[in-house]
Length: 341
Image 1 (tube, helix red, strand yellow):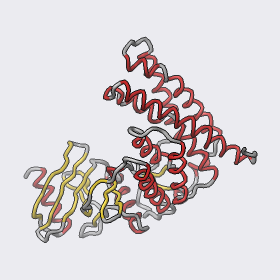
Image 2 (cartoon, one colour; image 1 turned 90 degrees about the vertical axis):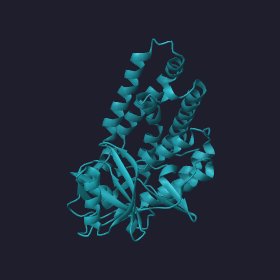
Image 3 (spheres, helix red, strand yellow; image 1 turned 120 degrees about the vertical axis):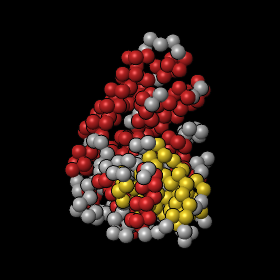
Image 4 (tube, rainbow, N blue to C red; image 1 turned 45 degrees about the vertical axis):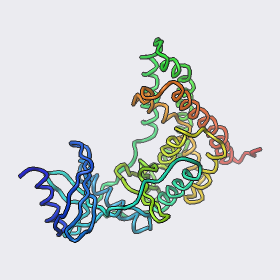
């Protein structure tokens, strides 16, 4: 019996239905699998695998289940006949999900951004103090101090390889790279002085989950409701990771505007209020050059024309300066009890 036939048989056995139609939407060997499954009774599901370890897969599915109980709109994982949130087929874990009808949301303008950030804030807020079974392995993001050092070294390495280059794109990047390198070093210095390490030592119940890939294509819109999907990168971290992701996608086609950034942060904190010390740490992460470094490391600039590259760099520079001067400095002074003009 082939692997696909075995998978279908295991699916029917574990969930107690017969497959009517089967449509593989995505299959990247040892990376990801998605199939649309319609039972003979006409019920539609999505069968997914990330080809990860079972303990990682169960953390994802358990998180989704707990978040759903808190009222978060998402594609709910379906339990097997034995009450498990995943099944094993061909030594690979698979999860069966509700099939969510609708269309992907948009990210064209400020209103779209604010709608997504509102969902994000509610997600993060709902994830506080989740109670996992003791058997579940909890996943956290890489320690920021270690991550920052790696990213700064990555920027430095790129510069050393390209500093003599006469390629137009390399010249554009080299004309701006010192700014991002300095901002990275500044962020690392401020992180080391912050309460980040104390925060990391706190109980999981005091932290929140981040989606890890929260953008408009992972939000399904139907009947004035946004439903979250694709939680494969979910983990415990601070909210800046999701904020950075969506805002960097927004500024691909929209110029940086102070009022839009302020509005985004205001809506976010309205839906997920943050303690003062957490705000400071979040602002540090928002001015660290994550997007610039990723552009270099992933060679994303190679798919841009020169104008697009200049635009991207300019938006990241303006955001970093604004966050540093108008969020981080003010928040730090507020904590010190200094008067802010």
